[in-house]
Amino acid sequence: MGFFLEVLIGGLLAGVLYSLVALGFVLIFKASGVFNFAQGAMVLTAALALVRSLGLLQSQWHWPFGLALIAALLFAAAVMAVIAWAAERWVLRKLVNQEGIILFMATIGVTFFIEGLAQTIFGADVYPLNIGLPKEPVFLLESVFDGGVLVNELDIWAAVIAGLLVAGLALFFQRTRIGRALRAVADDHAAAQSVGIPLNQIWFIVWLVAGLVALAAGAVWGSKLGVQFSLSLLALKALPVLILGGFTSVPGAIIGGLIIGAGEKLAEVFLGPSMGGGIEIWFAYVVALLFLLVRPQGLFGERIIERV
Image: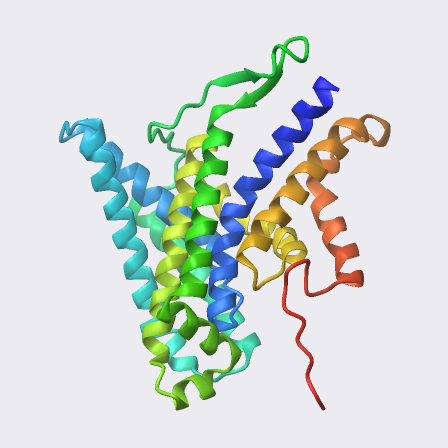
């Protein structure tokens, strides 16, 4: 039982890390109806800006760690603001009221541009990132199970960060005037403009918020794996999370991540030996495919009925 709980908790905490990336997708899709394929590139860019500026401030300018970390976070946030402004000004503004597939293809182009530019400016090596989060393994429930349950402290902090983000974003969408405007734009661009909602400002705000979420995801994933190109591929692992949770649900991104994380870990440990291993690689996509056949809008997604 102790081993089962260890695998389950490890899977749930890994799922939270997937959810951090999925949150950025949900934000932009919820507020603009656009599936932003560039979210993975934004995670990579934010992490590169953070780790490179932090290294410069500490190694060459000899700033204290706390002050250097704050400055590096502000610099990375500023980089995300510039990306949000450029995406709205030079891409989205030109495609107002276009079909969703056109906007989706535009985000693919933005993806490759951001990835190439970020690696040109900040470098393409693997950079270790230390933002002060503990990484030591801890043992829980030692009095209940022999040896306890092994958990990584970094994963626990990731869960705390994800929980705070979900709570804050839920309040932002439900309780603020800007949040309601974002939902109106997602429902109908032309109708939102007709009642005076500034579409360009709304798109800039939502891309900026998604960029800040990408910064949080990049900081956690970079601390865990190091900042490297593979961070941009996290977008692919977030897709099953979105399908399960729903493309328009912020809490659904977390629930979907927990389901995927726990499912793939349990399947790999308990079914992998009899199936030759490697289940963790494809498990999430098979579950998402099966889920599309049953409930394509996701667990918490909005069911849209179009009258013909």
